[in-house]
Image (cartoon, rainbow, N blue to C red):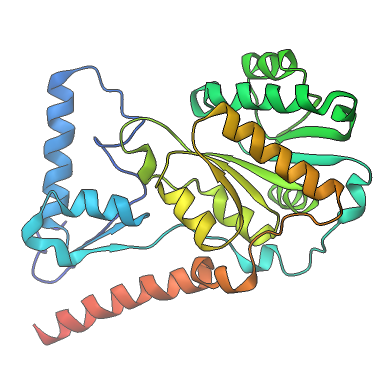
Length: 286
């Protein structure tokens, strides 16, 4: 379509992830890798606007076409404000027990060994108080991950998949929310999509991820919780701080209202509409 209508039909290419540069890219065939790279390069060169979902990914993509870097922009994922308008804090659920929740798919491939080691150290340090700590996984958790958690001496609850409304409710009812950022090449460029609903839930976030990564930047800029790198001692210390502050009656706060506006889907859609308007105006002038 772009080749046939290059003069009348502008093309916005929206990269929801990186392609051949993605940390999960595992194509073993050199020929296919070359073909993927060539196709991606053609898209980057021919599209009128290229959208990336993180600032770091925008830079990675723009570096492939340095002469056209101005056409690369960032529009992140976000959250729907209506999902959070009528739901209360629901804090009575966890009386006497600190609940750390993970909402989403809990796979070993997305969870570092340092997280398990740090969790085990934390629980061992709790001693008899471990009965007041619960790790709740809302979504899928494979059997190997479940076994590793139980071997760490952690009391866990596995809800399985829930509806979206129920998952939001689980976020709002937790005392803290765990987010594991990916590792591997360009893993620091990835923002887990669930981060934005975590922010909107106003619960404190414990992020385990690469130093200087996009997830770390957002959690810190929104003052939304604690961030640690892939270090078991740091994980244990962060869990201890969350638990002790909660026990003392002064829990660490989550994201405030000021940090949320930029990630509302209403605001993000407005930004996308401006891109379309600009291209339409350019076409009208041509």
